[in-house]
Length: 174
Image 1 (cartoon, rainbow, N blue to C red):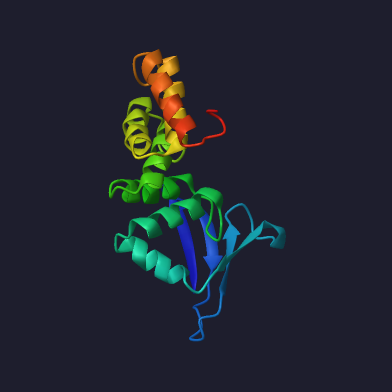
Image 2 (cartoon, rainbow, N blue to C red):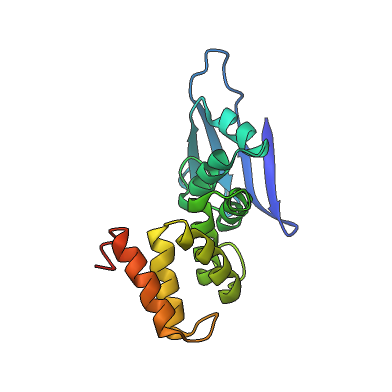
């Protein structure tokens, strides 16, 4: 079959796909980028046999599957690179208490990755992840509190999160 991917009314991808065989072998999808149809402007995405199960599990609300899909969209691993899709999957998992996703959501709000930057929302999500032991969240919070970004400047709170990160054996904090 074929498909068009539109964002805000503009076609950004046109592609062809094949249906997985009954044997469960890998499927290769060819996606043509919207900038032209030359062979050097093609992207091949290799989908493993369990990818359809991953998507089904994520859509059914499994936070680990949602996190995995977020990672794939974040890196462009077997799926088109899409910060917005990555953020959406991370947020779904984060709302269910998935610590790594909470950290990703917080970092996305800091950087504006797939979502409009919001330091106050970053503080909220990073705090939840940091209190659960996520070292990267602890480091980022230390920096945000030290510099007064998204919150009032608070050197004591910055040191508290830095010490937590060190206790979690973060090389950057030691």
